[in-house]
Length: 327
Image 1: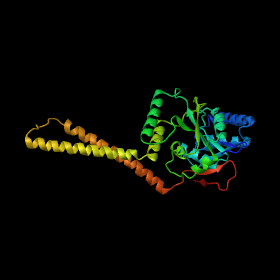
Image 2 (image 1 turned 60 degrees about the vertical axis):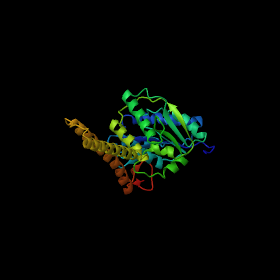
Image 3 (image 1 turned 120 degrees about the horizontal axis):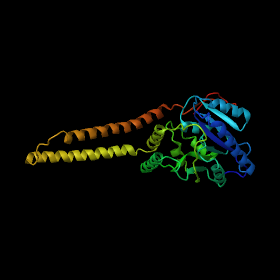
Image 4 (image 1 turned 180 degrees about the horizontal axis):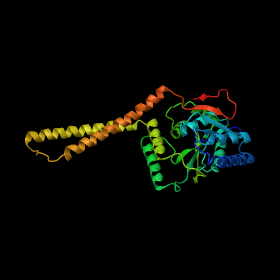
């Protein structure tokens, strides 16, 4: 349970080539912290942590200038691009505060929902999910693929919060428990619900980007979806086994029928290549697909066994015990 004192809030902002949007985002977030502090909801020592995930533009230079201009801004620079999930995780592991909120730099997630998140935290919730009230701002294809993702994930037993990305509040207790999850194949949207702590949801409307372009394309979204499913469910492997069993039984039945027909003279020669060619291509495709799914799981096991760091910190804008931190 949070104490009666004003909680120190930390905002985690992963950045990947966000030079265009960062100055305006920083000021918007700073204004939000100031208003919450004036309202008495959070401590005045609350901070904003920008995590530079291997940007190649002026993102780090802007972060450094922000940190020099105001001590509420803190910069964390990763040695290279590790990916959005790992940048968020790095920020959560190194930020200070009683409660931490992760939010993307483009501020498409409504920062006004932070007020309600803090209120929900004050009521004793260790996790507060930011959930989109609707997806009308998305294109039809994006809405369709998102719905398909949540449907397939639920069907395969992956527990997620529909229409929730990575806009969430975690208490210090939740972050401490999360730190025990050191998976190389990280999918925070699936891990956080596993913590089992008291949680609530805050609904908001998503806005257009302030500037710049989205760094998350269709390939990235498909990759994240595959990551979530294969990291939390072995159901695809079971589906392959079931399909294999069904094909085996059908093939056995067809073979017995063909043998019986040949012995009794009921069969006649089948003309054309289709009756033999189509099954060959169909089964060949299923075999390749099955090998690919199995290979995905083997690849994940391979990466986990190597136990390489999920991120490396090159430097920060505040003194640390080491200039190169790992996790």
